[in-house]
Length: 326
Ligand code: EPU
Image 1 (cartoon, rainbow, N blue to C red):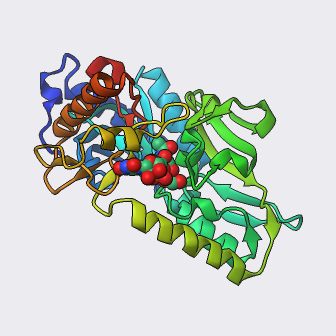
Image 2 (cartoon, rainbow, N blue to C red; image 1 turned 60 degrees about the vertical axis):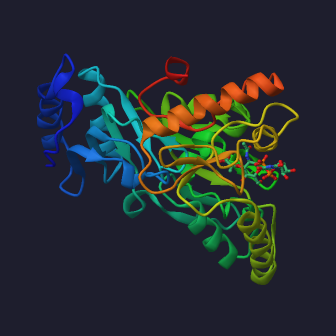
């Protein structure tokens, strides 16, 4: 258990609430499951800012996950899923809740079916999914290669790149409700849109059945993936970031709008509007979540003033609502 000091001591409930939750959950979990107090989240995100999870868990199997969700529900504790942390902003004070990560060790299966479809676990990294699909000669997943996320996060966000998005290749999703019930939903029964999947706001994706576009030879799949990777390297920054900060407004590009407002290089502390792509806020080294939030406010205000456009964040703000901080 990690006993790092936190600001929780100043909150009404105090640390006892979280210690009690751990005491209740621990005996219900398998010996492979991890359960910790005050787990730092910044190293688990690509932006590398923010505080700790009051309680953090890595379930090793479905029964562990059920026990975690039911225990949290009984204690009226909020649950947050953590994927690869690539689209997340964790506040500096951390997250008052139970953060659950489906780690690759236990949740990353990739099973090719005889009919060409593939079953993938929520913890599988998209990069690995693409590599395994390429080896199997399956065409149609290349656009996912450069997205630094996991299958679960990509389903939750309907992640996209290069003109495609996750649900283009999904046939069905297996999920667990916050009450611990496992369900399978067909793609057609799900409400999916740009960076949005309604069913996964109150449930956890366990995995999905994917349909490749076609069979192809391994070299053809690799060539397509290389072309996308080149395009990404030319147009996106390398520094730590949470990917695109804002959604593209209908028919417009948030990056172009921010660029046209002269905001590239704008800085608050070590948070900077990337000079490479204006819709990325990068961490120059020691940025805090507070810096990032201040820069988000500044960018929105300038774009509103000069362009009359209200930019909506795409990145998830952990444990808070954007409307309460903007
Ligand atoms: N542009 C500028 N200045 C900039 C950035 C972009 O003028 O600083 C222009 C570009 O020249 C281009 C247009 O804006 O004409 C669109 O830019 P880009 O092709 O980079 O695409 P995007 O709309 O900014 C989207 C996704 C990315 C995804 C790329 C590549 C969103 C918010 N962004 O970016 O997704 O990687 O397409 O397919 O939908 C993410 O979601 O986190 C993300 C990075």
